[in-house]
Length: 205
Image 1 (cartoon, rainbow, N blue to C red):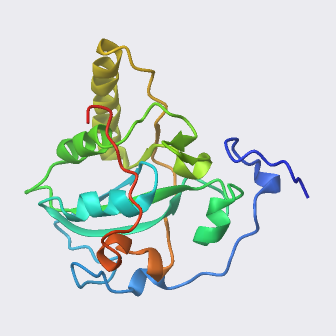
Image 2: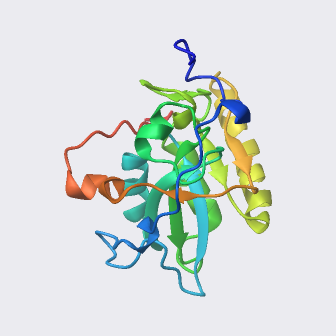
């Protein structure tokens, strides 16, 4: 056992925690929309954002007009079906992630990307504010059609940061990923506990 494991360093696959058994958290009911967490109509799309602690990030998106479903979970790592407690150790390789289901006729991918960039600091590497570790790194997980828009928005926002003398963006943008739902008690956490922890802060705020 490595007693001096650095949570700001990505875990090597051979050292990651072992996979867990599959679960059915995706069938839980959304506290706001009253649908299953994995509900999606044919007219809707999905994109995934990691921007620090997922509690505040999820609330930000469920309050966005045109978003029809949200869920918190984990992506970008190694361990299958990780728990929140396991992910917090940094030994799964995952980052806290929000699944955002939306109606593109009401809110566009570009509008969601703007919300993402403007509501956290995408230049902090393996942390977000006082939340430190790979589990809090900034990332966008998207499909191949969304990738071009995500890369263009990153370039545009990077210029804005450069203009104010800010550090370079460290956000990962990936199309090859698996999203795992977090435990039910973490879903819509700030609807259950409105005064709960939320560290969401934008660079321009």
